[in-house]
Image (cartoon, rainbow, N blue to C red; front, side, top):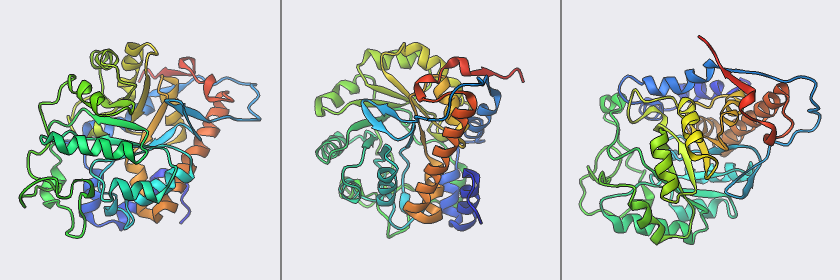
Length: 355
């Protein structure tokens, strides 16, 4: 079967992954309304394309905090890549490097940071951090990532507790015995493990904005906050000196009933007033979605589930296929909208449908 668009990879992954793995990747919280809204919200945005503009030569490159990437799509942090492909995050790192883009490696990787770094030397990578009650564990992870050449620290802010994902509960989800949360091996005492491979209640729900200062005392890496959905929190992010924001609702896996990320993007972009870079994840399925997000002020978007579908299809090669399809679709959408370079994309390009 020819893989023409991202939904082809989704269908393949659903058919071929074990049900428990598919359900884990697909899960949203509660009724999954926010997960589904992430996708539906793009359909309410319409283009205002311009004609007779020279689009014979296209420049789709952009920069993340000064580092150039081939096009404005990176790979969002997701856990447990070995559930999708035996080589796990090593394949993800290689695909991102081959496509010259950014990969955000998760705290909950099934390969170590060292293995990820060794798999694709010289790749552009950020490290996503969950802060655990045992702060020494988090401190060590940050320092390992910096020593290994990761170029940014992404703090996930929307997970003081894990959202209620019904299928995981029904399935009794747990990692297969041969898989481990490799970055956290030996970090916690005792054998009591919850469904996600860690002791229950190991995440620290007391984290506040003041912990940004603690993180800054540990590392020289730029800090990006993931999970911001309101202008109030965007303003606090600027005030606390972070370098970037990822507008994210955790793929609809946390608070059900929150806004679609593309809808939240507008107020976040307005709040930061260009002082820091704003990115987005959630619901990106086509090149035209990327164009809409950039038109509304995102510097770059990140894909989560589609990256896992690509891995499930053919590992590193499948993920490259997903990225290449998005790259081609984005270039085509830009050209048809009358933009020859990313710098020409702006708010004038879109309007919200009256539907």
